Length: 148
Image (cartoon, rainbow, N blue to C red; front, side, top):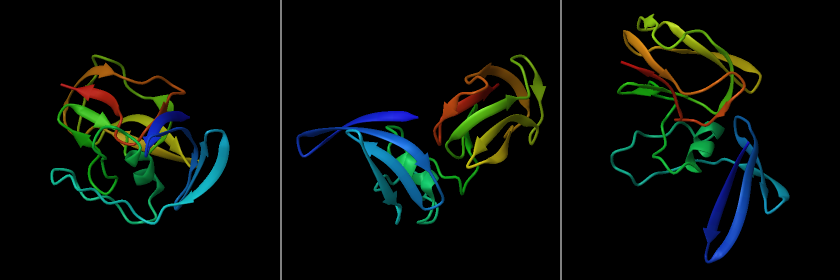
């Protein structure tokens, strides 16, 4: 669970993202639980990729991140980093640092909304660093593994 400290029109808010679904996000704002319907997210950053459809709660979670949002409509990797396409929990790491991997090889398993998602290598290379552990909760766009 992530907690964000936000200032809106000079007022402080503590926002916890409790649960994400296909078109609904459950949050606690200053301790009060709210259900938020995701109608869509727009970005004015000309360098970022377009976001997924309006019902994509994963994109809503990305909107809370400080880094530019990444879209699960596009490959979830950039450069040497393999990133999470959606928020979820790491349930199994299938490689070790120093392992040689091939493009498309399974690196880890991410559970999101009770579904297991296989995260794969985006290119051939050597696993330089594993940035997560079993049981870690990750955000959309968070770096998981570095491949060299």
